[in-house]
Length: 316
Image (tube, rainbow, N blue to C red; front, side, top):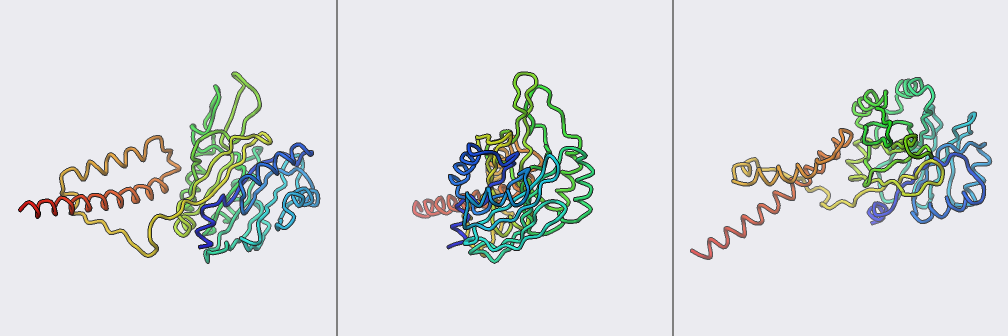
């Protein structure tokens, strides 16, 4: 019950806050985060020393545990906060950011959560180092943060849109490692440049990437982009859809159903509606949704056939 209760909640919030800020920003952050009631919070670009960052968020969550890194230069600084009554954590420092191994109350399945900030300057040098480190090869991996990366043109807004030069390579790298980009329920920018008219540029730079093994054990994830800008970034949040099938129940498809008139058309209509406006980064999620739709189609079809057969028997 505890595990299922967690799936109904907002599990995680990730945001690039672009410096800690004074009281007005602190109050806005506190109000926004408390309203979502997450169990883990992932912060990028604190731009302060670790001591200052811990003190800042300790006022917001006095009983939570915190792991943080120092800011380097004019950017950087990461922090992870979690509710110890829900999550037990081991923390590790790594090249990519803060890595935590989390055990969630009610679940035996551990998740490796990586809070990550990818700098825009010298991006490919940074990504080469990350990929060589093999941290993305970890199973049970959930990546959150500001990756400074757009994977598709529909993640860019403005009159001067340009395709990200490293998008194709990184999409292939994610695909090879079974990392799924969790598409938000409503696509909108997570970052804006603060200008208007022709100079306006906005992008989806912040995202969650989840290993397929996490989806298999936890169910289908969902994410959303909050319609509020505390810095020049919007927060993103993550949860899981509650499973609507019984554990241990396997769906078996009987190919003889394809011989029935009209059955193929039902599948085509259902799947074509499902795949409208889907980007290539949703391939795994689309496949799982297709299987779920197929299961429902078969169940309804078999029910209607039984009802039809009963009516025929009664009429004889």
